[in-house]
Image (cartoon, rainbow over all chains, first blue to last red; front, side, top):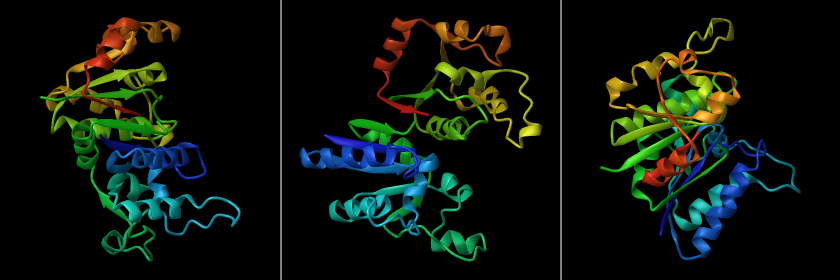
Length: 130
Length: 117
């Protein structure tokens, strides 16, 4: 079965991000597939490469990156949500003439069409943090 | 054609959830048949006479009026939610279809996918 995962909660602010990670791991461990992970609302903060939590706490950003890399997951960050919250990749930083970018390359900026396509294509859509 | 159900359950302006949810609805309307369920405090998004100037917040309720132009004409709310909030249809910008619990259940079951906001 293919799952679409929507994350709407920022890391550490709510439980949404960690619960979504646990769910994603359980999906993969059960032999199912993840069609896409779409980060919306404050969920886009999960892509922030500058996150630096205390060493004895889980690094949610790095954990998403590692999971994405290991399983070749599409980690999509909504462009509108990301821009208004200051999450920019190098291209957007240049376009908006900002001094730095902070979106980890493991994440991809894209549009809401990816959310709709995912919900329509996957067998199940799970939303965390709504 | 597949059917997407969007559930708006947050009040407007206190967070961006409602406004960004509406953005997703507009995106969805370009692809498929979309319906919206206003649940709980989400019904406040449809209040008429919202004055957002002092909040520096976008008066996105007006966009709901344009939804019909995007082919989105299936709007629903829960009768009990209105009653609990002492609201009537006269307080709302549009006239969503009133549902009881069984109606909500049928709506949820009838959707191919549900996106919550």
